[in-house]
Length: 150
Image (cartoon, rainbow, N blue to C red; front, side, top):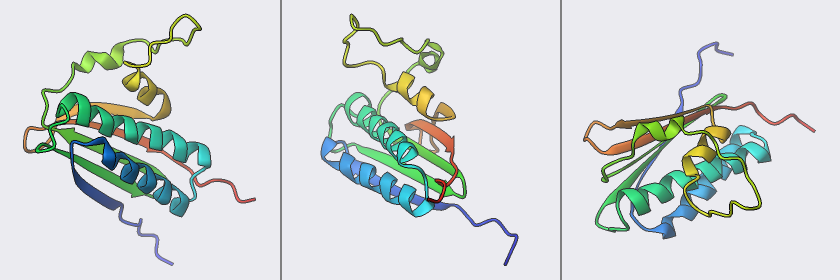
């Protein structure tokens, strides 16, 4: 048995700016999670975050313009998940990550505007940057352990 660490698996998609493609992201995250032995809780958390990232790129970045593409990179290695989503939009102010996570309350039924707060709770790191072609990119990472064997 080799002590050489296994190289990370990298999955790439370039999808049109259309919500119809979200299920591919959802199914892919769950399939990878099952193969890696992640807990159901981690699989669901990463699916929520992945769908949120791609939804934001489609709606806010590319404004549903199906001629614009959303690039999705998912990298999985032993114990680590990284996802980067880039779009052709202007991006967001990085200070959005410094906003406090809103506390849920019965009086606060705002259905939108919580995506980055949710991401910060569910993953270890969220970063904004530009990719090599200048596209706006959001990258997130999470360390994961296999689910305990029953």
